[in-house]
Image (cartoon, rainbow, N blue to C red):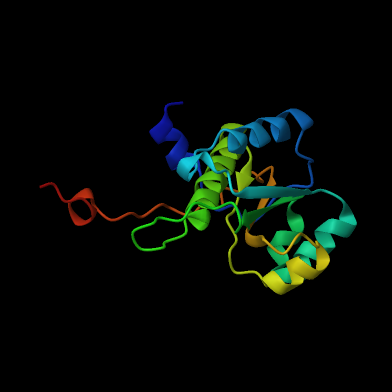
Length: 170
């Protein structure tokens, strides 16, 4: 499929089968974010792969939704606040942007593997910090559940603003 078809196929999956993600698919996903671009190539990130039942229960405590329990694995995306690039003109840090690019690489790679994913930001970061201790400079940014999608056809129709509403040419 071409890139636009891949983008259109990607959606926020909120239900998964119990089939595990293969090692080959996981490796492909890992390589996808390894090559993600970042400001000044700082790569201010760390990704924690959570596959164990104990680890998954810890993640689930940070996000109180039943559907997340169906995913066979989670990726927690962290930003390294010490390594992020900061724009000198206004002091804007770009770590969140860099991690967001890498997370979308994860979601698109999962889709390319025929898997579902969802980008979760509405979690309790204090629970993640206490359950998965990291050095203080690592801030949890997103949780991405990944897994096989059931064949129930439960895919939301994408609605997007028209190009003339979001593009301006000068």
